[in-house]
Image 1 (cartoon, rainbow, N blue to C red):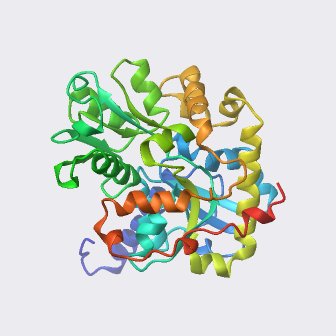
Image 2 (spheres, rainbow, N blue to C red):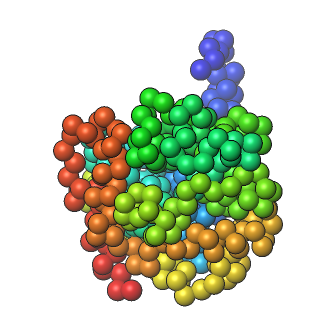
Image 3 (tube, rainbow, N blue to C red):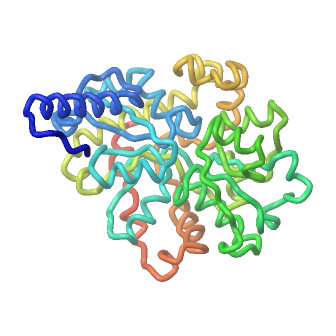
Length: 354
């Protein structure tokens, strides 16, 4: 913070300006029309939820729930905020800046061994929805994860789920983690630009970025984990990913609010299962299709739809698969005991009646 001269008027002006900057920064990434401030985020039924990329199709149910008005119907005011990678969203949750995260379930395991108790309360997806792509220039030397050694591989952020999955694919295919070179490039246009410029040889990303890369003929798919079959082939089973996860203590002390969130999100999952990609796209913010156009956005939704659950319930074998994947490369999990039953709950989704 700048040191101000001793005049009270200037100090007051600086404090006011600083507060205004914070307010504007907080509003810049909000998708909700709610005007509730951070100070009252724990009052009543106002909840702040950080999403690891609002425009990513893998997190589509969060925005769609708001677009369909289901949060409002349940009587809960939700403010959706965005971060480019799930690891930053998790940091916001642990620090208390938000009450929930829509991000990958695997962070709940990683956090438990670090002494933080977080749990998935609505399981939005049963597969990662991630795709490993390779640039046209690197395609001849990077034909599978066996060729990861010495290659620059894009991930949304270091310590993110894309980082986790990249390391697992390497280890599974005989490449030590020490030989993997992850490069944090975010998602969307920053990922595409990195691929175009050769800053990365390939990387892990999601739709609509995948659809844009293929449409522009910038690269091709190496590993596709958008479908249950693709997840099983790459990871050995269903890999629950996108979820609403929250601090367990907060869940236990705000059960009525969590139930409302679960009711709304499960209603959305059911709605998605009964509607076409075109109908889903029509409900989403128009600017989400700006990267590649409406038709490409619809195609992105169509390619990704198989990853979502219809009821928000955790797949029976999912937590074990996630644990096995993380344990294969994460030294923290190799020697630690993880209580998987504490990483998720079905208490709320099973009361939704859908």
